[in-house]
Length: 330
Image (tube, rainbow, N blue to C red):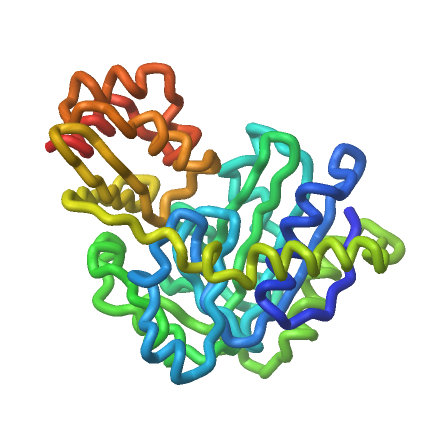
């Protein structure tokens, strides 16, 4: 395990750094830990419709940046009171969707601090039922990362105002509002602690078997590549906002693995265009499924035929073809 050195507070740069590392570092022989703290920003899940996830008026008025990440899951709010961690390693089926493996040292650190934390739901760390951390993963089937937020002392009012959290997500968790759902870790601490001090405690726990903390420092050439990814992808409107299709049918359902929102444009009885949005945690690119459905007659038999060789679990989660077709057509 090596700690990646990083001092950036720019959301686009930090997400570009994370992507560069997962695609280029030697994960066959090493595992890496990356921390980053972003200036006020909303980080959108890979499959989400940005405009519908944010309160754009509030975001614009308060100078909050909006950046899409390459992992699934829901939108999260970052600021200087939020610590982000990312474990980067080689891909393994036993690692993917295994959030417990990667959140364990974080939970252990919190327990040592007197915070009654536990992994709950699909991918959250909670304290007394309140969310203090959301987690997601990405893989290209060669390497992967598992990353998460840690709300230490974030501005909760910005969390509430900046995000448009869908009511069915709130109701599915048996709570009445975002404000009652999320919490800062500081609320459960007897003494104040800074983000830097909190990060050092996690580092100490992760590297407790080491005599000293091994580090990885990117070269100037590597940082040049990171900044190129940031400029050409994470700072662009096309990546962050440009996925809003024309549609005349909308199908929405919250499955056990998350919400799937299908926008379907049907013309002359055939699917002319279809886009999938949601906070589901599948790691395949749903554009593959969309492409297979384009041109199919909008009825169950034809959609089933178009997807007969498609592993829907790879793209969405634990979803069978029959259940998916019923969702799309009924």
